[in-house]
Length: 428
Image (cartoon, rainbow, N blue to C red; front, side, top):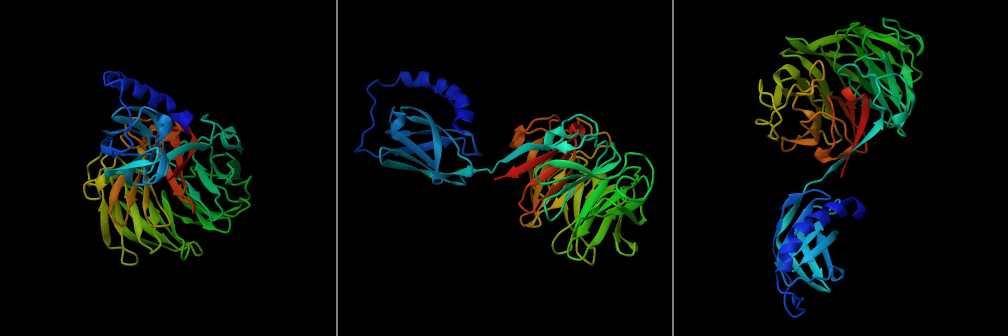
């Protein structure tokens, strides 16, 4: 940790060290006087953020100084009489800053507001648009379209690839294999090496190695067994899909200008239209109570529908207004959102940039988070700039993130469409 943050901290220290030289050369800590923290800046931040503490009765000898944030030890970069520069430690949490000088302690009046950070890595994919099975970055994808992703109970990921006309499987250790599809364009059921797709688009994991794949160009939803054998569920113009894990019921959206959401019994193929008059509904997810969350791409919103009655609930975002604005659901803004996932606590993750071509000008090159208790919207990771970079929080860059899913351990996986990679996001 120290090696990672030492350089920027030392550079920042240089900015105020000169001012410190102008102070009295004879400055020393008085053990009989209190250690006082007057203020600190910034007042809010995450792990690694540099915080400057102002106060009195400090010491120039950093070996005699220790600082904690909410009781967690922080890295002390240096002291200049009335200022101490620290780096906020990981997982500190919100709480008081305490300075300890050889056993004499002083505590801040106000809490430091800790913001948990996210760390983004490349889980699989070389970034080359091609077809290569392998482990981690040795594998290659050709996502090709606004494809989805899902994870099963064993931590296996499933990724439909419109570009490669296959469905890939990624084991928990990052090993990529081909689940089904021979790479030829067409509609054909059969064994893994015989099955053909026109445009494998979204996927849901139903448990026990069973996944369902939508192929809107073939007007089908297909069932795929653990060995890659496919069979037809039914003829539907299905784009985004969701599953009620309590009973196995499927839901899909048709992504039309005057679009709808449908309910499907995968055992019989029987379907029912349950919600209509939506502007390009692109995806649907189901929470633990059976409520639906539908991404209405054309309206820049996510809308809740109550289980069973399908009556509209909370609308997340301002209908018809595009942008990247966090805050309460009613005032937040999205920019052509595309897919949605639900975590174990029924909170939502929204993949931005649902433009048809993955435009770099879309403002949502990120994953948004919706707390469904407070209905507050925040940016989970990424930002408004398209690119590729692993890193922490907003320093991580994506280019047209379109698919998102959440594992049982809380890890978030993202289809990074234009980068042809699968990214993994770990939050504190």
